Amino acid sequence: MGSVARITNISARSETSFDDAVRVGIDRANQTLRNVSGAWIKDQKIEVRDGAIVAYQVAMEVTFVLED
Image 1 (cartoon, rainbow, N blue to C red):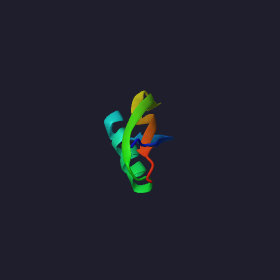
Image 2 (cartoon, one colour):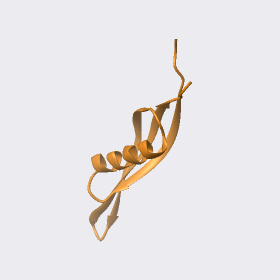
Image 3 (tube, rainbow, N blue to C red):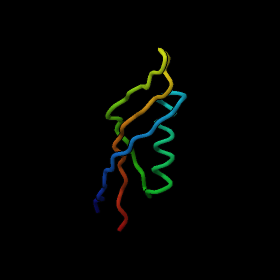
Image 4 (cartoon, rainbow, N blue to C red):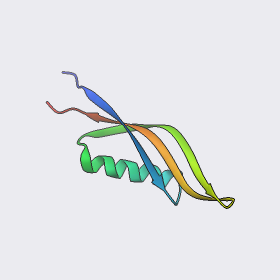
């Protein structure tokens, strides 16, 4: 028997690092979606203010398996 998955796009931001932004996004996705099985990080960008990095942002596609 096979399975069917769905993909949703989300954006997450952190003032710490790209890794933390990914963690924030996945943690939030798990609060709303069931059966999260993976993610593809499509884009990364930083926010700079006064010459310093102040935030890290990731755009990702989160995959979750649909229930029967």
